[in-house]
Length: 178
Image (cartoon, rainbow, N blue to C red; front, side, top):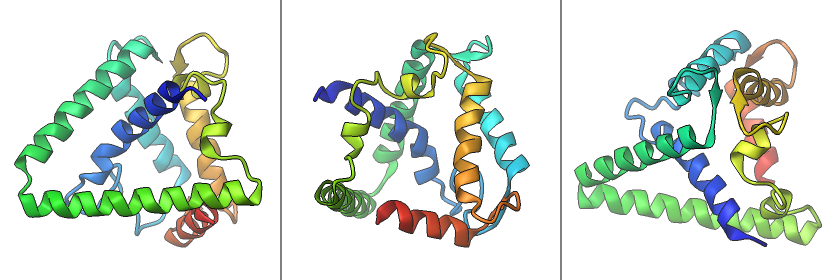
C-alpha cells in the first residue's frame, strides 16, 4: 500500500473540513447542522465552495489550485493554533485523539467483518482529484464537483423529500460509523 496518496487525500479532506471545525458560532461549512437543509440550498453552497477553490476562474479545479488552497488552509490553521490558549490546545488535542481512536475502531470492525477498509477502497487511485475526476482529464469541473455533492445529499435524504433533516444526518452518521 502506498501511503503518500492516502495521506495526501487525508490532508485535502482535513483542509476542506478545517473551516467547519473552527466555526465559533456552532455552524459547520456555513450552515447550522441542527436545522434542515433543502437540496437547492446545499447545491448553492457547493457552487460557492467550487468558486472559492477555482482560484483562476477557468471553470475547473486543478492540482495546483488544490495545493495552493491546502497551503492557505495550513497557514490559517497555524494562525488559529497560535492564537489559542494552552488549555484550548489541550482540549483540541484530546478531541482529535478521541476521533482518531474512534476511526481506528471503525476500521478494525470493517476489517473484522470483511468490509474493505478505507485505504483498500482508495488503492490504485491518485487521491481526491482522481476520485472526483469522472472523465480522467486531471481537472474537476463544476459538474463533477456538484455531482458528488448531489449524490451525497441524495444518500442522506432517506425519504426523498428534497430536505435533509438533523435526524437523517444522525441516522447516516450511525450507519457510517457502524
